[in-house]
Length: 316
Image (cartoon, rainbow, N blue to C red):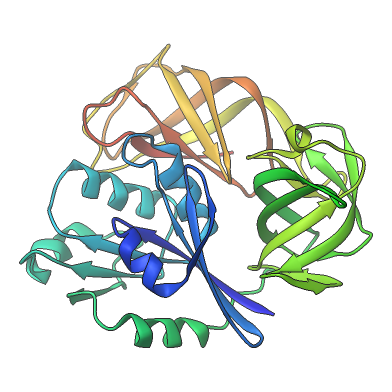
């Protein structure tokens, strides 16, 4: 089954027209299935109250629908987040008399430059049909699955939900639960309620796993082949502050580092200060371990910011 996962910002009503409500927490997921095709629309339900759901939703989606009915700091934060996370596929839908000329300058020189900008929400049925025809982007390599929810199911044991970031996950496959040392075996796989023996990258999956409790495999854990990821208690990064960020990064600040569905606080050590558009070396001592690969970039956030809480990104 081929699945397109979509991030929908600022309009759960649009998401609800694209699919039926499924998993609901600080993110809400709407699903639609037809034959061997499916879409999942992810909304950050607890945003803007909390920042993390926005980053989770953007990470899960391969494409973004951004609805704008007013220009405020929330829209600014969403644009910075989309740019920092390299979201090149998306559409801006304008409501409440916002016109394209008000928005296009904000997208200039960002990852969002190629996004379509349209007035109104259009026809959800046509939108759904177009999404169902999308070909998911395959990412070959060792198996990697980011987990967003887990819970007990009578007769199955522990079930976890997530996105296949890379490679293929197979029935009976043994995988490590990062950032822990624990391992588990995949008992069964479901994709939109269909039992399958394997599923490739880009798909949203439900996995029944052996020998672990739901708390062992909660939000932010990663199922991957042993040795694929490094577990780090600190990060040494080159940090680039986004050009739209209004604050100043200083030594000793408590920042949050986001990678995949991990969102971990830590203390920042830098020489001098970093402001909008600047880059520099930084060390972050994390409060809990983070699982990363050498290719992962880290979204840097400061929750006390009066403007965008998304600061920029760091690379190892």
